[in-house]
Amino acid sequence: MKISICDYNVGNMSSVASLCRHFGYEPQITNDLSVMDQSDLLILPGQGAYATAMDGLKQAGCVDFIKGYVKEARPFLGICVGYQLLFEGSQEDGFTEGLGLFPGVFKKFEPGDLKVPHMGWNMLNVADHQIQYKRFDKDYVYFVHSYYLDQTDSDLICTTSEYGVPFVSSIASESLFAAQFHPEKSGDVGVAMLDTFISSVRPDVSN
Image 1 (cartoon, rainbow, N blue to C red):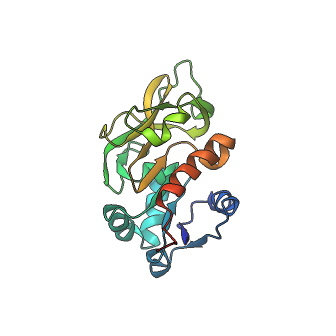
Image 2: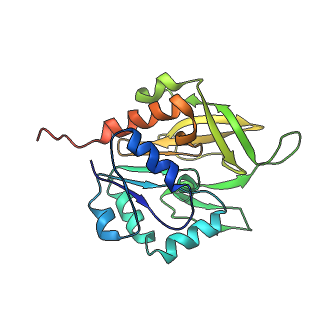
């Protein structure tokens, strides 16, 4: 299985690559479109500011490629800011437009009695229609973020979580899994969730 990790100068790639190696794959960290186009799975990691990440994608020349890749329903994994970029945009720094692949805009958590950023372990509530992920209902995963997605297409929602307000913590389809939390930092649960997804999209080598 060929795995590419999109390199757009946002960090967090080494820990994602290490997790791929845990599954027995040697990923390529690259922004070479021809290499990514040959992938069986494309991963968009990310951390830091939304606008900086979006600028990084533009400078790497990856925006149109990623849009096409996801629209063609090719296997895709988005993590943290790599999840956020898939949507219409974020209110961080005023407003920054995202890839617009799915409906929704990220809003900032209101501090109140809560610390912002939301950092640490929090529970997943798995949507009833996400059968293959249902075993992770009420499990805990690791988050680091200040902006949240309050709603999107209900068919896309895989999990929700709550931090003062309920928010969409991951989305999933047959070809895609994308999460606000960090599976690679979420211990056995994160590993098992990614294994569930990767196993479902792995090419059938017997053909």
